[in-house]
Image (cartoon, rainbow, N blue to C red; front, side):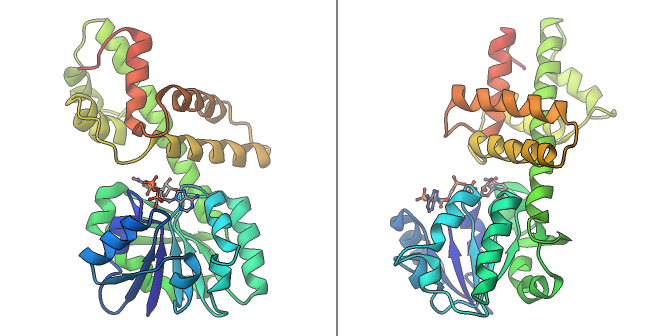
Length: 295
Ligand code: NDP
């Protein structure tokens, strides 16, 4: 099975590594070409100079871009995906994208006989390395079955969420919950630090109680208390996900004051901390506002 993988970023690179082995034949493309060349030199893969070249002999094309906008931009032009891709191919978009753009892309591709599945992932870069990601799929069941072996190469749990766009919608809501729980945990721990309670003591209670979350169980102990703040998932991307979740709620006419407020807070955090900050660095802002360090 010939696979083209486009987008070797923080999560795309370890995902693609699982496809650089039998029964797959992998071709990679990345905007910054040296990253594709270095990937190909370390793995059993070829690297292509353009998206059209990568897609030219692929039966499945996988994209992993920051947003749906970049996926849509990949399609056109003399070196774009559509210049190389053939009818019968499936485009699997692992970007955490937005449902409306995905539906537009899927409609365009359908006219050319190309199927589309949105297949965003969760589990972080460590899950991508281990091949234990959860993959949320939107599309028709037959198409998902056709690409199941590709998804299973990097995913442990493959969930069909609904029609095209449904995978992206579920991913956005999941990440909105992540953002809210990081912010809420940071605010609570900052207040406790002010009141003289150490984060370690507070977390020993919270993590045995009903307030626990991935933020309190993993992110804060491993990244904040150690002051390590590794850069694995850019805050800018989580802010984008919150914006998608807030937009879905608005479009559906569902009252969502908490999501809208969180989207505004994270937008301000992105403006303050910049494009390269990690998502957990949001906690540094809370610390700054509170005038304490969570330790
Ligand atoms: P990165 O920012 O690390 O990588 C982005 C990738 O997209 C790079 O390959 C980059 O190329 C490429 N790219 C950026 N802009 C363009 C463009 N205009 N045209 C072509 N290629 C472009 O992002 P991640 O890998 O972290 O994330 C990718 C997707 O996966 C996002 O939607 C994110 O929300 C999602 N995700 C990320 C997780 C994580 O833990 N990191 C977890 C789950 C989902 P170049 O090398 O040239 O910059």
